[in-house]
Image (tube, rainbow, N blue to C red; front, side, top):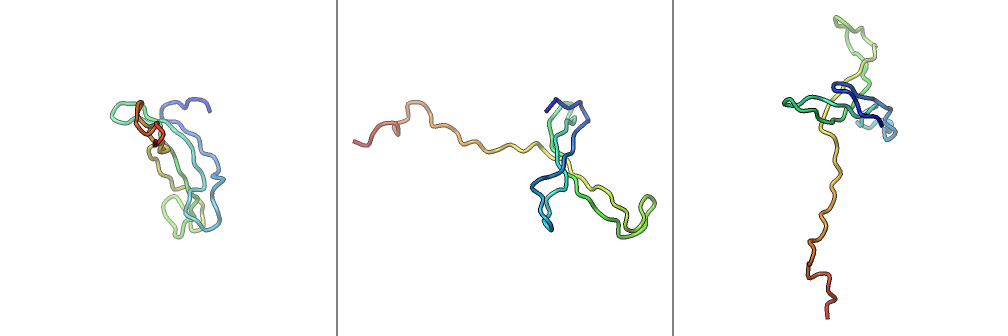
Length: 91
């Protein structure tokens, strides 16, 4: 995927979403500015339906609710240090 411009991102339909679960409807990467430094982040968006009239929405209108969070990093187990005695057979 191409590098995103600062303040931009991409939302794609969440293929892991199942009927009735709370997973986001759309997810994707973005770049944001945090303490003056560019940082990769994740966007999650849910489709919501307005339950009452407001200045911008009428009852039944659809809208997005979203969350921006740190980019997910998989836990990678640390490799055993070089020269570890566990490399030797037990005899």
